[in-house]
Image (tube, rainbow over all chains, first blue to last red; front, side, top):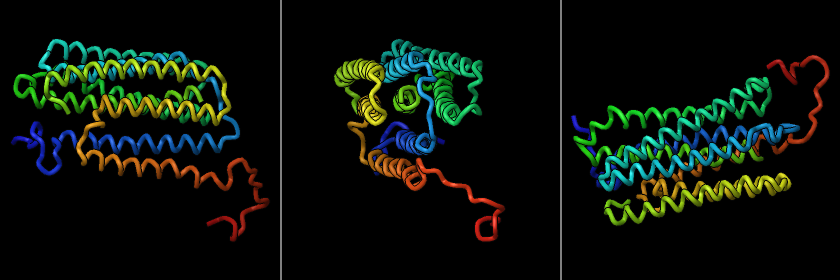
Length: 194
Length: 115
């Protein structure tokens, strides 16, 4: 059975089903992170004092640069596919995957440092919300990496069979990835700087 | 969204410029943090820069500047929900924040507790 409207747009919405689907998914993600940001505000405004300068700003800033760069490589992975340049697409997608990996490695060292100092999630309200927000974000990075790995491996078969559908799938992966970047753009100042 | 190769090539230049602008804004965010403004100013500056960066990612990388009305409709509903979520803390903290609430002495009575 063929899934309809994977390449052509539905006449009523003007969108492919996949695109509308990914945007609705992202809308639910906004609610998920929104609830956690809201929790952060409640905890912070209700706390008699809030720790400042406990996080490594340099590492956080480096991770911001990494995620922004990965967003650029991701959009380039899609644009090069539109130009039918398979080799460059692979290069950009591998680049995005590697940058995501570096982000997680940095996060690992950051977490390790906190745990060695005894700053576990149970240590304080700040560490609890810090690990919850960054942990959930890290899981999203991992999820994105799994999807990219699929499109670098078994998913490539679709390019030969239906290049337009493959290009659309890369676009949806990109939309998810930019959202993950967008969340970090807010997490970085809120947790590391304020 | 473009499908024409010339338009895509033009977009690539925009993606690179936006990427560079995002990196510059990150530098400004970190730099501004060195000035040790008061908390209200620091929060305002950091969130204004983050919002500008977020808008660039959404409008250029996620192509929201030229999307279909169904996506805008879904996002308007999302923003509405998000604003409600952000308003919840105000209602929960406005009456007790910064105030000491004295503990009620003695064992709970039928009127004050035990329900």
